[in-house]
Length: 619
Image (cartoon, rainbow, N blue to C red; front, top):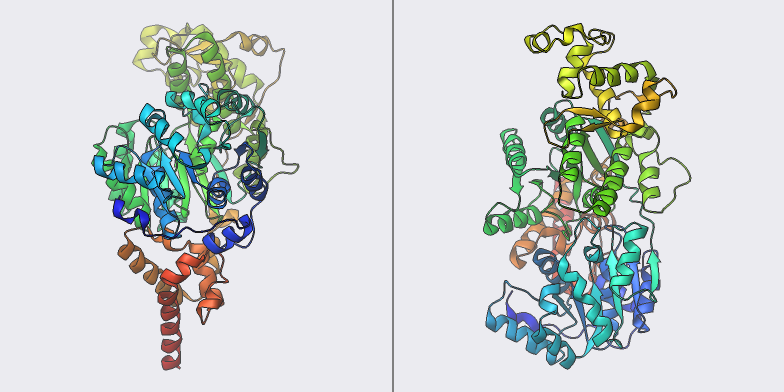
């Protein structure tokens, strides 16, 4: 980042109300639920712990107080990409923001440190490992600090899905800077993780602000994995052919193969995983942020802190390890509040693979027990026959009294069937064949297939041979998947894919317990399910929309920033609807703050005027 720009902005505000800063700097008329309370708590000099869903406006909770209180707000952020993205967006608003990280040379870092010491910064972002260096701590003691904000605070939890050891040292802030208010923020933490965050960061006495976890604009859909590649292509082609999205895969090889597949179908798809050169990862992330309609295919190495508002879908080609991971990854869709989809396919091999990885891990018994609980909760969401959103919210301690009407189980309620006899047949077959075979072999035995392998093993003579011909192979796969998901069968911990009985299957084998199984449903597309892109669906003046987008793109290229940093789609749509004739009218549009009005207002007014002139000539 160009250090010479650090002093080009004037101080934004001093001794003014948070509401005034919200309007003048960020262009919004009112805070979202809980934002105002959190901000006033910090402005008063008190600590806070904030749990707010992705896209819920966590950043404003510390950005506004940092502008109201004297001194510089210090933001601890885990990723370089995240801090660069936020600093870039803040500078567009006229805020004096900078970061300290490993991408800077000695002189750039020195200039930034001097700007901090001389009071020329409103916000400074740095990674935890940088903050904890003795030199940086000494710098903080010399500077005027307004607050400390610990973003992505779940990274402090050793049971969390994004644990970062450097976060454990952040309790030093409570000891050495006790007079400075601190705020910890996260979007994903169950009750156990929230307690751990508060204890490790010395925030047990802080006021806790817990917003609802619900993201009502996201439609949750989970389907059985039949032909995953075809299912993904059909989903994107039917619903999001021109939109930005993220596709998550478990392995690097699958990331690259899926990206190649999408490219072969005409989509702009870019791979992203830790095995790629850092320059390529940076380039792919940059293209995703700046270009329209780019799909990133990634491992979980991608996404934390990505603030792209118009991601219309997040697809999972493999099962996440926990609901925390699923919630955070799916939360990267629809940050602008417009309808989006969290789509996933999963199958029996996903369950077996994750269970084997868990049992074969180096963790102690307590760790494995916690991880089993997390995986069981994830599997429970997949196999549930009631509202998925209610189950997801319940896991995080949130409640929704009625079914959401915007998940696949609400839109297309799954059927169930009495699977008691089928389950007994499946479990008996596992036992009769010695608990040494995988699902495909077991299905062949049940369906009476006389292949060489079965004949050589002598399993054509067992009592379960051919007793399951009434079900198709796909139906038997569903039975076995649900038995593994519900813990009645387990994968061989040695890693060979064989299914083995567990103690919980005993009452099923004895007929002491009946079993209802889920019929794998046919998932309807978004078009029949009733979702859609709110902004796109409401646009009637497509010529005007494209003209405003072209204006935004030109300005973004001139500034070297992604288009959404200029204005979000929702702001652009409101400009198109209201057709402001002057700067004063444009200032009334949500998302148009003072700095952006001054910087971009005339350009958009000219674009609107040109539309009017074209319409007059056409008539």
